[in-house]
Length: 185
View 1 (cartoon, rainbow, N blue to C red):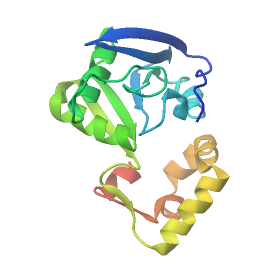
View 2: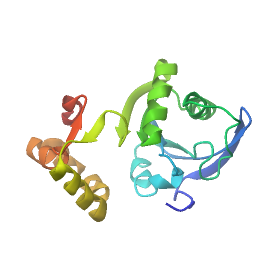
View 3: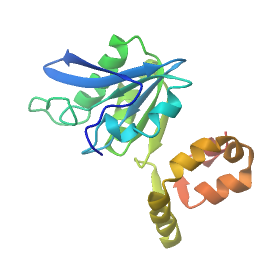
View 4: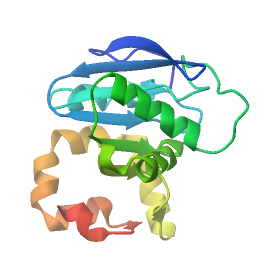
């Protein structure tokens, strides 16, 4: 993705433990935090954020060293990333909140939940630990999904997917998860 701004969300910056963090906030409703993956930026959520902002107040940071955020000082591990996401959410009065993480963001979200369990109401992992493509057919379907961008389609017709176990199996059946019941709720 490009370093584009997220439509409808306000761009802000904050200095947190020696790192200048760029982030976006906006929308109305209960809080929701979106964390991008490795090499990405807040703009990775460009298509999804406007839909979520109609029902949630969003916090969408650029992780340190990504997008418009400066790099971390010489440290290792996921804790510094998780800590800064938590500090931003705290600064914006958005804790506790459900947290969504994609790729590296999923690992950051898991670390955040371990470090501050009272601040994380729920976790959604997309392409992170605990989620894998189980077979060749699944990988082929995923390639097709990537080409046709099903997130936009599924978001528009989310009621159908939520009400139909068959449709959920068709859409998500090629994916294995640690808790399959969670997909049906």
